[in-house]
Every structure is written in C-alpha cells, then in structure tokens.
Image 1 (cartoon, rainbow, N blue to C red):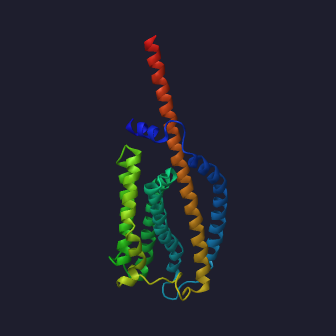
Image 2: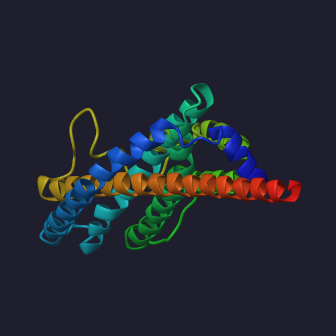
Length: 262
C-alpha cells in the first residue's frame, strides 16, 4: 500500500508521464522492425559461422567466439546505458530514465552470466581450465555481482522514488569497474589477449572469421535493444495497472464513505 501511495504521489493520480506515452507509441512501431532485423541477422550469422574456418590451434572450439564476444560486449554496453539512465534520473529526474535503469539490470546480468559461461566453455579446451582468477575474468564476475546487487537493492524498497535513487547511486559507483574490465589486459598479465577487433592498427582477425563475428555482433545488438524496449514497455504497463488499481480503490473508499454518511 505504501508503494501505491508513493506511486500516486509521484504521478499525481492523473496519468503516466507524457514521455511514457510517447515511448510506448514509438517502441510499438520499432519493435517489429527490430525483431525482423534480428531474425535475418541471426540466420545470416549462423550460415556464416557454419562455413567459417576452424582455427589452426583451437579447432572448432573457436566458434564459441561468435557467442562469447557479443555477450561480453553487451554486458558492459548495458551497464554504460544504465549509468546514463542513472545520471538522467538523479540530475534531470527523467521518469523514463528510472524505467531504463530498473529494466537494464536483469538484462545485463543475463548477458554477463552468458559471457562467463561461454568463456568457461571456450577456456577449458584452450587454456586447460574452466576458470582462472585473472584480472579480466575477475572484473567481469564483479560486474555480475554489481548487477545482482542493483536488482536486490531496487526490490528492497517499497518506496519507488527511494529505490530509483538508491539504485542510481549504486550504478554510478559501480561504473568504476567498466574501465577496469576494458584495460585489465593492458594493466595486468592475463590469459586474455588484447583487443583484436577495435584497435588502432585495424582488426587482427582474418576476414573469414571477421565477417561472421561482426554479423553475430550486430544480431545480438539488435536483440539487446529489442529485449530492452520490451522490458521497459512491460514496466510501464505494470505502473499503469497499479495506477488504475489505486483509482479503483479510492473510488471504492469514496463510495463507502458516502454511503455511510447517508
């Protein structure tokens, strides 16, 4: 009940913010296109992966790269997106930023967990072990814990405004881990190789492997955007339903009070 009272106070019992309505209209148009592009890229990417050559050292296990790299990139990209949303919530009080922050944490946690799992599957035949406590692996594991902490912190509050502020602060504090993940292979000796795709001298990957990787990367980027938009739409719908429940409850209370007075 405290949550409903806080929600009604936040939106002043009239309706959801205009930004929510605009987002719902725009996302409804964009989502079918995103789903179609994702499906096309997935089919093309799988075909390219099937016909891509094996590595001369790693053999077929190198094809795990086409999943692991997109998962790893999106795990950090999602956190950067959440950090921008946290700034928008704390500084400019954007309601949509609050929704983006709340919806990003579960998606980021899933992509981070998948990056760790595919990395372990790739590392076992390549390094001879499922896990090592090197800087890159440890910092990505910390990122997963940060995602989980944000999710739990958001659910620990009945007050929606306080939950949004607390999770925004934690998100910005945790952002210090992102450059550590990025530069860990340069700052410490790790089993991970340096960047081979986005680098000053150009990609070091052979074109026969580069194009399948780029295709799968774009596929998962579009999938990530689609999942993010769907999660935000679901959150907005839930808030709208709660507002309707509040209005219905207050109308019932008014009817009860009027009947008692008569």
